[in-house]
Image (cartoon, rainbow, N blue to C red; front, side):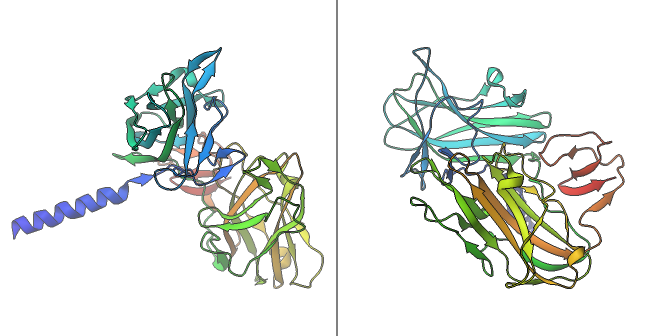
Length: 390
């Protein structure tokens, strides 16, 4: 009986440990590409080569990291992803294969300096000699002692004869290691009037593509990970297109009293998101002309991290039946990518909680994931929750 209980306890402990681990990497399978780069991967300051998409990877697509040449000599080629990490232990893993032999892959990580990856202070793991017939695991255990921004790196060693193929990248937090959560929508205290994740499906929503230029089959689409996604960039031809009247329109929603709207969004490559990526509302399908609603918070455009829109006050439209429309516009020189999910309307006097800071608030971050001091005012993230400090 005692042995049975110990065995059961060990199994439960193992299950708990497994569930506590989480892969924090974005687009680690390299299935999503934007502007000629795998989505969520960095080029400025960390990638010194032009990477390309490989149709057949270890599991789906992969990325090819070619040999780098600097001053006519071979140089290490790097591809990286940015994370905001809390103290803890992490395991970086990716799989690699050679396009030509010899070939070597190296994992690594570094901190941030002057808003960019500190390429002079990269800490590399063990070099792995690759095969051109099978995928090999490349791994490194990383200990983070202070919270901050870190870049996880994939390196094609300068001694390689050609490109290396990389797939199935992951960053798993273990031994208490955590990643600062992506900003979440504010948690209202009132009842939910309407809620749609948009990552499940686009049921009830209408995607109007406008007049599509030749070479572009759609602007708006629904994605199981990113929600509603709009772009007028064709990654296959590396072409930007001018678009107008491309809308993602909500179903009709009956508002009550003191309603607020909240959603999450991410964007990159916009010149002015407040003009190119906008939100509008009209009364019913055949109602008055659309009125623009100001989005309080836009993503900074430097990463693919989702941020909360902030609370959009709808109290002026109490009792009315309305529709909301996200409008995307682009030109032949500027074509952003906009992603929207977790659309919610609630009945509440405020969309965020008021916070009186005490000594328990040991870590506080702004909407971009940067550490801020305890006297910061406005919307902050504390213990994974978004709060309003007055």
